[in-house]
Image (cartoon, rainbow over all chains, first blue to last red; front, side, top):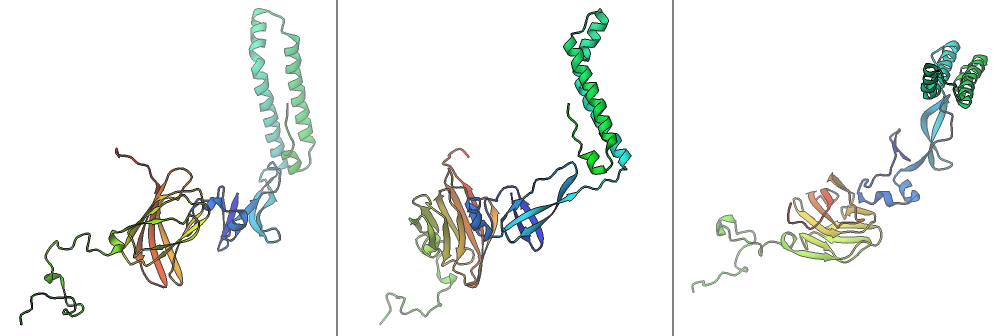
Length: 154
Length: 147
């Protein structure tokens, strides 16, 4: 990814254009150093947690001759309780999706009076236990960022 | 003594107008080289001077071997120059000998010499020796008799 400053408006280029100015082809073949002569510099995006951070403005790092994305913390309009409710709903939704894959087994065995395989019962129980644990963990959080960065896995 | 043949020495400069010419008497042969000649380009890298007064059509005789700049000289307003068989996956830049600036309006296309040969057509929009202006189109080409 490259970027160029057009009179304080920074334009990003996912790919270097083939032509630029009087160069009618092969502009994308120029080296990084040559591209810098035309104002095209690398755009660096630092690692960030997109659950609680987002990309901000782009600034030029003259020490390293590159553009850099600033990372800013996300601010949420929702209350802490509302965010917890969202996350818990997400945890339950994920659990529901997993349980649905074996629902037909439960329905079949109930309808036919069969004994359900223990492994299936155990895996479903584990999902429900994990979901309860996620809900408890989310409810124990005291900041919006900690709620939103909580990783829900099954 | 009666004149039997008028030579150019007898005629005053700028004295012959269109009324003295027979209609359709000016053919391809009488045109300036810049409008009728074909020439070759043998250089394949660096600055390559293209004299617009010498030919209307230039053929690249070999693929570009490294970055090249086509430097236009001798152009006049309204003239169109064609360069064909332009090939080679290299960076290609246009410029002219205008002393201050050379503006090239891209009408369409990017040079891509990685596989097929390209045809570049450039029209001189303003032959101002200080700030020259051109328009160009470029595209890959292939021999094809069934357009």
